[in-house]
Amino acid sequence: MKTKQLHCETCKTRGDSLLHFCHQNELENLSENKTCTTYKAGQVIFHEGSMPVGLFCVNSGKIKLHKMGSDGKEQIIRLVKPGDFIGYRALMSSSPFSASATALEEAAICFIPKATFFSILKYNSALSEGLMKLLCANLEESERRLTEMAYKPVRERLAEALIMIKNTYEDKEFAEPEFSFSITREDLAGFVGTAKETVIRLLSDMKKEGLIKADGRKITILEPEKLIHISKMYD
Amino acid sequence: MKTKQLHCETCKTRGDSLLHFCHQNELENLSENKTCTTYKAGQVIFHEGSMPVGLFCVNSGKIKLHKMGSDGKEQIIRLVKPGDFIGYRALMSSSPFSASATALEEAAICFIPKATFFSILKYNSALSEGLMKLLCANLEESERRLTEMAYKPVRERLAEALIMIKNTYEDKEFAEPEFSFSITREDLAGFVGTAKETVIRLLSDMKKEGLIKADGRKITILEPEKLIHISKMYD
DNA sequence: CGAGCGATTGAAAAGACTCAACCACCGTGG
DNA sequence: CCACGGTGGTTGAGTCTTTTCAATCGCTCG
Image 1 (tube, helix red, strand yellow):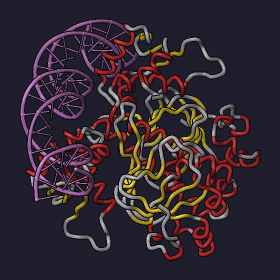
Image 2: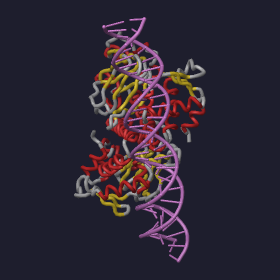
Image 3: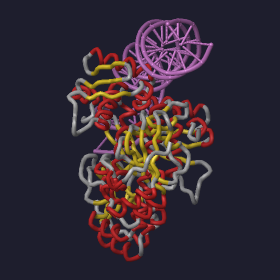
Image 4: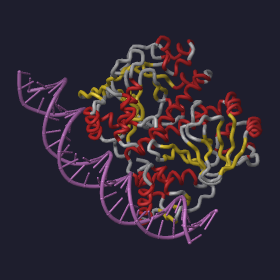
């Protein structure tokens, strides 16, 4: 759904995003040419396999990037938060989206047409460098997860997933003593790369061990340090 | 071991590599500043965790990029062939190597110091764009493999690995009717993300089915189409 | 109220891993 | 020349993790 126009110049997520490499006039250019849309939970922003005609900047809401495995099971590639861009991989390589993007909750997202973005990128080498670094960071993380997927048991991957969710979505400025979030068991399984029943069983173990609280969809992380230890993240 | 200086201007792998974006004077600059080294099979080109001081261009030989899992098992991230660059991810993001590079057979590799490379990159936007696209392609592949690692059984992943090796190393100009290559069962297992015994058993199944020939280290692909079908690569 | 979705649990089965033993090959040094 | 050690390959047995299937439950929404 088309929504009221948001302004990059005053967007509070800009500090975290690629756009902090942009100058005032570039931001104005963006604001004039972009379109802002709100998506409801479950709505698809773009589909795996279709061609990009621009890229997206998330103003608010949580998004999942996910791929379909050949057996119909879904793998969540990355979780996305306000300030993040999505769709740049496909745009930069002029290839189809290799994953779909779906809103996990109501989200406001700005669409920047290809031409507008490239016209800025052409003269802004800091932005280009930032984009390159972003791709590098994505690649490093993806290769790390690839390795872990191969050798870590599900319990370790689940612990890591919980920590990754905390790192992604926790409010750094007003950090609560305990971090909570909502996610379906199915999505969590898709993120970890396992079956939803397995997630349920392992979560209930972790609950018994006092590592987390789980109340329906809402999961609270009680012992982040222990989860990090279980995940063997820094071995 | 330091070896005789190779010349980028006349390097036959250049057409396939990032360096086809470079002009004559840039190539001369590279040739003057790079150092060429030969590595024996098993020798390490760089180590996971150390800092890059430049990047590498493979002149000849096969290389593996591999990461250590937390339980000590090795995951092969990518197989590298002549003309390919390695080490650019770490260099571009000024972060430690996230994987090691090891020669699978005798290899000649040129080292380009950071300063030389960046001095060229700064004024060559085509090279910069090529590098960005390369990162995009790496990312897409890594995310695809991540998804497959999560859901595909080992037999499918093994079939896919064999096809990927063929696609990487087969000589396109003088393609033999049957493609053969040498790799240890251990490395193959590291590529697929499984135990070496499992690879052995599945290879011997595939041999019985007439999909491949296997004579010690040497594997010959007899039925690439059937392997592609087994791998469910294009589902 | 009934449909539907998500969560939960149990039981059975399958896939893959580990462990252990053994073999084959190769190069070395006595 | 041959015994030796090392590396890589092979095989079998047992085990364990994880998946799959099936049934049940609770909740929300039309």
